[in-house]
Image (tube, rainbow, N blue to C red; front, side, top):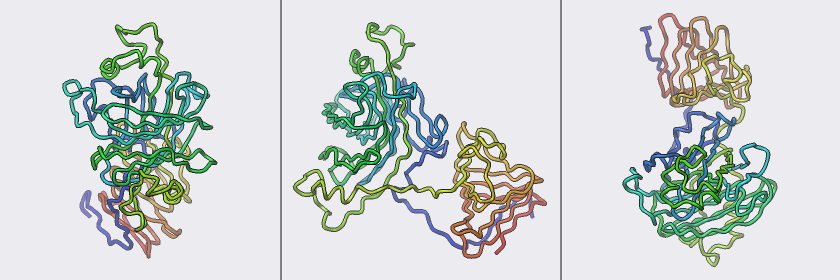
Length: 427
């Protein structure tokens, strides 16, 4: 076999990927999936960021973490938004948590909340030269400390041409499921507190919004300080204690919010025939009870349980901190190597010796190296076991995929064997 020869083998079972909205979903277990989210500040060309920190599966395992500076979404004030673009009708569900920066309770500043947003793209790419007032259009629902501290509230807001109409109501706890549904011109806002029933929080007719929208997560905090600034000063500056020439020094900075998100799930809308063409913003067409019957379900993860996921703080296969759950995979585990194409993640190198697992899935952008002296065996005898390579697998040692009969065996990426390496796929 030639050096770096590409291994081609037959597909036994293959379930094709499709372009459904569910492919946009994120369980926040892949560090590099932060690259799949667009940051409105970067897209619109703002010179400064209103996020002190944001990452996936780094600060908090299995979560998106967003920590904002002093900032607000209101009228022409703009802070942060991590989003994906979605066209047509959709269902967007997040599970969100909020706390103060000490991580021991409620934020100490009013209007410190985290939530979900649907927004009309501004079209800007250079905010310094293109930003004008009157162009903010969005709907969101967030949870946190609203007009008073130490009381959890939902804040729901609809903004049209930078004119924000908001209301809020008290709830219990520091977490919530939030679901936004777009059907034609209607936007339906639902929420669920853990252990309680779904609630239809608000309906809006937003015929002003285009077909393609920004859909994602927001955080904001410290309205008492924000409210002392003009829109322009707020929007174009990092608002923290390092600010030079603060025009309102008498009002202290008190950005006190950590927003974490367990998942963000996108789904297609599949309405029963009798609802097609009805106005979901009109209770006379569709009642709250009907909306709850259609949309108060438990969303499902796209990721199979039981996978041991590579996090890759370094390349050491035997370093427990490189794996989800901070434990080294065993022969009962299915290995998932996600995209490793960001600076936070190193590519894995299988350690010396023999290693046997139930499944191996290498996603696009993932790379696994099997060095000389290492043997990687994937035993597909268990139900639902599979071998899928959408990334790269470079083998200098030994690779065995066994018990492949009637199992998923797929190579859509690159697989290469060094001279003298062993690559075998056996029934």
